Image (cartoon, rainbow, N blue to C red; front, side, top):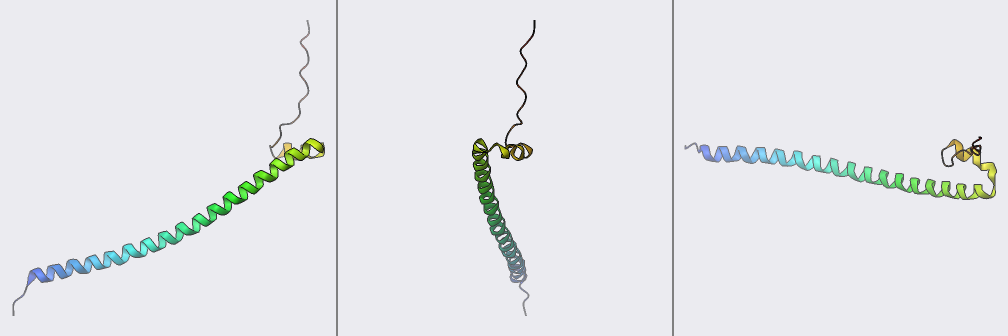
Length: 91
């Protein structure tokens, strides 16, 4: 019987290629799942941020009618604290 080294070498290359293809396919599947998960979480965070911004803006507008909200808005940094008017310069 003849031993064909070229066929053996090509079969070895084919086997290595098959194993690497399976590994890369699994990596792609896992990365794609993670991307979908993170995209959903990012969309949820952006929606929550938009809702909170709207709520803060509504509270800031309402505080013009009801100044009792001013201390709360000042504590979270939405409004600047009211400071005393500057004194006129004396001679």
